[in-house]
Length: 459
Image (cartoon, rainbow, N blue to C red; front, side, top):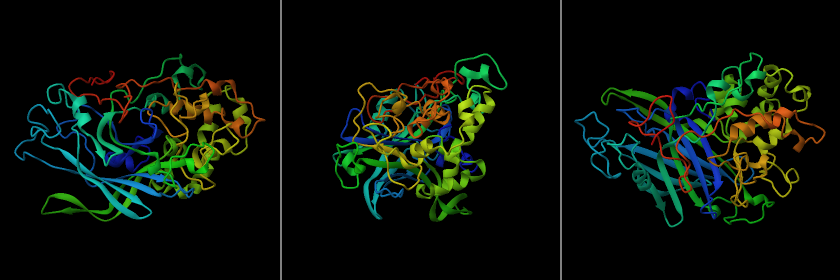
């Protein structure tokens, strides 16, 4: 849901579909920032014989904006290419895969990393090996070892990983898209039924992850690691994109389509749920093609979100104060489009200036929390969403409560939220593999042999 199948056209092109972006000061390496961009949603672990992989014809990018313009000042580009070792077999592997160099693995994939800063490109690494997918206990008997071999050090201070992981996002997709039902509160729905626990619609699903860990000084405008939370230079904007070349032509000699022309952006993601829930369906494809600094045209959907108008209708009598509130939602505009300025939350800010742009905004001077809360900033944990986004942050609950009016008093002290605003949730949690405590932080992907549809993921 965060951005899984969020627009009509990209839902037909899953290999380029950016599902989630995370950005946080690394808890075990606090002088670095970790940025994670996920692609290819809803992967069945048993998806052979042509298992999931990154697109050789897709340009994947992670962007950092540190100038207050909403434009990318630094970009990390990832280009992939797959090989077929044994052209006489249909199999993904012809025996157990003991290492990422094992000749039993018939379709390895490799990638390059390029850093672009203010138009100047520098290749950081070539021919880095991605690990295979988690086929099963015979084909990939020690998957954690294979994944660890896919973590590469670039230079002395940067690390990168590209490969399959368990989807760390959790949301009750089946309930939410059934006329905005929230199972824990469905007894109060316009079409009521008994309250129930939420069901994680991503249970058992894998994704493909690009994870990058770099020194904080690599990303700031002055090349330093700031210590003052209130210093404007301590805030960076982060988003990710996928691009394809402009045209596709069927090559009769090769028997396959070949892409030509300049790259055009087909997917992007900054804040979770922005295109999914904020942007109207008729404009979703257009949003995916634009850069964040052009998001002023979508600001009207942030300051008057459709969901805020639907909640009082779908839950009669539960949100009377929200229904009566007619002012533009300046709180949501700050959270999603400009960052939170000084003076709103004492001792904190992640403001990037007046340019309205959908990006994750991370104040890199905020250290990792000693006792993190999945509710992040609204629970007093300044190291969590919407100050960046950690893999375990419960962004669905945070954004539901914000839309329901819980954050309005930050900018309008005269407003008192409805009691339900502080309690609303979809009632889910991560039911896939446990998150890791070190890079790349997302859990081991579910294995094909061990997985059963409708049950929790088994690695």
